[in-house]
Length: 314
Image (cartoon, rainbow, N blue to C red; front, side, top):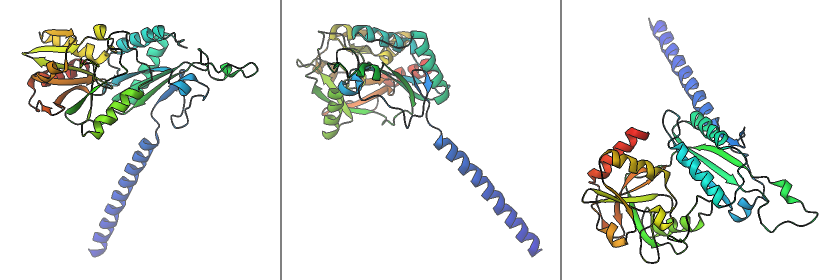
């Protein structure tokens, strides 16, 4: 009987060990699988993908990008909105896009399907031509770096349940004198996010020199007052047209919510009943404070809007 018991115990241990080994191998395989990356439509290893140092996007930040949310079923959210914005911006900045609208859409769809829930980032570089001032006879660097498009999948960042915003003047922002495009020159935006973090906040709320509410470094902003939704007008203020905000406003109208887009002072958002931010990675997220003014976490209108956005788009 003792021998039989020992044999059964050894068999059980062997079974557990085998299952653990299989689980470990599966985890190792998943960890080793690189996120999908395409450069000009060709699959590359994301760990070794690179751009030429002669590309003006590398030298001067002269490039464009888009970030597309991907649903759990692998479908991109608002793809046509992002594509329209990309091609409109490329025209405004005199960019040569080395692929067609349909080709790039297929690449984003392919990477989204393989990566699954997360986001897909597209980078468009200008190449080594385009007025960089680096041409020297006999040093034909133009041939070294043609324009490129990289399409890559990334996991969603981890965000808190709400955000606290630090109001700060965006001294570089035209605030109405020129329509903003989604180019890679986000240095000032990122600096404002760092300033906000140093001040003890989650991110920044950008204002004009006249304290007009603009947007965040990487997100749009909106608020409710007496059940009406207010948001800064991208047309009147020269803001980057937010693809996610467009989808959110559609949801608000579905809910028979009055929407007002306009020009608003900081004091107006501070008097709001509820405030939210929205982007491809944040969806609809409540704002619990702007500066020292607190809005709290009980925001039923924002919660209902977030739920409607999730049901319709995610």
